[in-house]
Figure 1 (tube, rainbow, N blue to C red):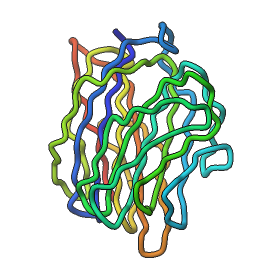
Figure 2 (cartoon, helix red, strand yellow):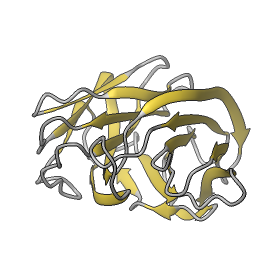
Figure 3 (cartoon, helix red, strand yellow):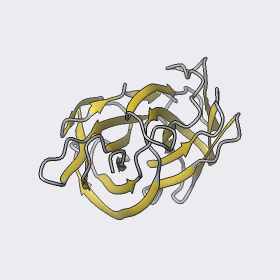
Length: 238
């Protein structure tokens, strides 16, 4: 059934020593839960210059959020830099939609990533990420039509790389299957390119003095040949 999606992310505490994990999520296709075209409706994001425990993506954000459409899939990727390991993140919105946490990597000090998804039962104009500790945060929101969601697999085994992070491969089998990935790193440096044919969202950087952190998100809609293809999210940090 067309309309599956997968998640992949990597985490780096600096420009070296990148740690990565892969998460796979499969859905039944369906625009708003009942068939339709798998299309990206919008992206929105927020970055900051002062650490906080909450971050709101709305019409006044770095990349503004328009009101979401009832029945759409909303994916939220949060990068968070905290003083200790083990902190967590939750996501809520001003319409009362429920967000499932599909991915969380928080075992590397000061460099965490979490990914959430929700099929919106009500239109929202503000989406809030909340961390259990004061953090440097970046939040990216993507809204898609034509997807529903059921978690089927996750790979939490980290992979250590360098300034070319990669999530490892996730396998998808239907046309228009969606793979979303993100990697984070601290300090200076820019994500100069993504690998594997992924389309990049803008590079977001929260310039908190001495606690700067970065989030790079990308996505691809699969075009598998012969029944299944593997996609690995990654890139380079210049």
